[in-house]
Image 1: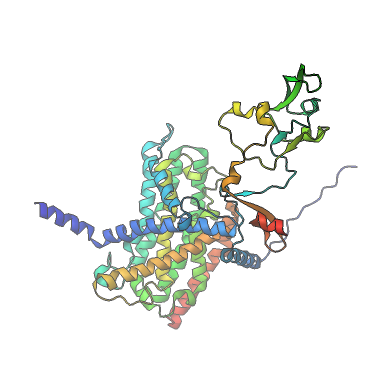
Image 2: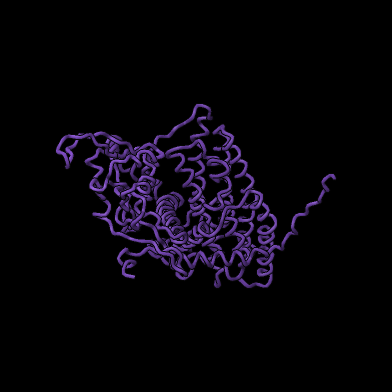
Amino acid sequence: MPAKPVVKRLPARKGLFAGFKGNVDAITIGLKYLVDPKRFTLIYPNEYIKLDPGYRGFIVLDPKKCIHCSSCARICPAAAMRMIKRMEEDPKTGKPKMKLWPVINYQRCIFCGYCVDVCPTEALYTVPYHDIVYENMAEMDWSLETFVKPPEHPTAKEGIPVKYIVDEEKGLVKVRAEEVEEK
Amino acid sequence: MMAGIIDLILSIIFYPPIYQLVLVGLTGALVVVIFIIWFERKATARVQRRLGPYHISPRLAGLPQLVADLIRYAFQEVIIPKTVDKELFVLAPIVATVLSILPIAVVPLTSNPAYWPIPMDYSMLVALALTTVSPIFLIVAGWASNNKFSIIGGVREAFVITAYELIAIMSILSASAAVLSFNLVDIVEAQRIWYILLNPIAFLAAFLAVLMATSGFPFEIPESENEVVAGPFTEYSGLLYGLNMGAAYMKRFAFSILIALVFLGGWSPFTPGEGILSGYLIPSLIVVAKATILMMIFSLTRSIYGRFRLDQALEGAWRLVFPMAVLGFGLALLEAYLGVM
């Protein structure tokens, strides 16, 4: 059965002053916000968003918990995590023994957090910040010594921590982080 | 010899059209335009829940940002592409800027005849005629650029100007129909009640027409960035681009001064007297202040309205605003018949 031709009709033209109410509403809203602005710009170096624990920021290793199983390096989808060999003294026998340690390359890391999830002893954990700048690419390839302690967070030294909360009337509102934590 | 040259230079500077053009036209317009662009950015930021210019001086709310932008435009390299018509390409924005500020040289800013730039009998006609010249040079700029976006932008400019300049001129001329005079001083003096209250239809038509004809931000149909790169200014850079952008604001300032004189009572609460202070400075400051407030209202539309397509703008012009202007003109004739003004 062939398709039926349908004559489409344009909606009827509205009168000349049909848009009048819409214009008045738009101007009213514009003036309302002009008089009482509800702005929430983050003035970044002076303020920063305090992120919740569990945020997938930089990944750090706790060397005491690590069992050298290489799961993190195997699951890493971006091949950022790799295992390196270190000669270390075995605490039981006192003889030197080869051990595998994970190191991370932040040139490749996509912050997916699979390594943290897969770690059987929770030796890897994330810190809730990500705004760290490196001067060259080589610095982003961390050594084991860098990997075992949380990186410095320069913004937190100078900036004020803030949080965004959703308000019923105002929408997004920027408040000090301490005020939220008190509640 | 030396004294003769100094006298000559002084006589040129104090020749009324020249000093009005320099004092109000160039210096005043530059200050007002810098303030207006700053206000436009800050007001839009408030409505859109942002901060606007801030970091360059938080205490002055980012006002020096505009001076910095000006310096940047002034010292940027001017690139002239090989394919353009060089003379016209360079000349068009300069001529457009000069012509868009020229109406200020012929409007009276006081009722004291000693400070009139020209004899005032047909001043309104001269001012309105001068406002219509500068758009041609935008079309010239688009044509000289030899670029498809520029040419499309120039054609759009032609469409919009044809529709809206006519309306602006008709609705501003309705005042002279009401007063039965082309003399701007007579029109200002005749406004015991401001003409905006006597003929709001003509004012609204003039307001919309100036908004469209000077291609202010949401209505910048000739140079809308997401359709034709920058319209007639696609190939321009540096100071020439800055001039092009400034010319639109300058033209808006000239139109605002005309509207302030015709609709908002000019120097109305003040009666100009003798001497340069009460005869010229105070009344001209009042007129410029009224024009500035008008320009601030123009700028606010940026944060409220979206962009019109070309066909929507033209349909609005011919179906809505042009009949409004005709209606305003009719109302003015009726008022003249009844002798209201």
